[in-house]
Length: 272
Image (cartoon, rainbow, N blue to C red; front, top):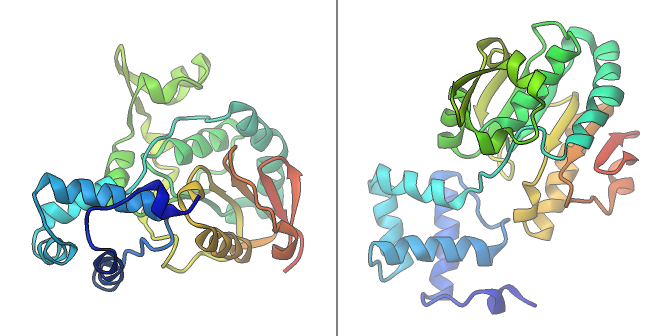
């Protein structure tokens, strides 16, 4: 099934291509690597909300109106996550991967949560570092395209829904209960995480990273963008470094990237 059959837009197809090119050029936001039926449907919904008749008119207003652009960015990004998503995988990480990284790299260990959304994932990494008594100067780099979710992540306040996989003893150690349905991450856990805005499809990557987690992000990318992303992740890892992906994601050409599977959804770099 092609993407045209998944969604039929009432607006001009050629003008839509023009819109994506100009958004990339003007805002440094490249949406062309995402699954286009999802992207276009969301853009069209925003246009209908304000009764726009063409992509060109909409784009001209996006350039002039910060609130319109902020809404666009908010609606075009996907932000659904939770602490310890797939708990057995985090267990494996805690028992088998992080201790080795801490032993081999020590205080120079580099951990990157790519596409960190509202912060549950990087804070989960931070909790595991605390549980393993890692040196305080080992930080988790947490990046996302969306500046609004980064702002929310920095606040560190979460509903009960995000906490569903957090054991009670960890809730007591690492969270402050605000009310019956709201929790705040404690300040020493927040201090473990450094948030930064970053575009996975356009911006340069860190080098010699020990652990990259990018989970339930690439499912929104098309095949070419996925392949490029995994290639860049592999290049960013140091030899022996690990890429941790989501439970619905698999890297089929991992051997070509110098990776090997050490556990389902964990890929280790074995060669350059």
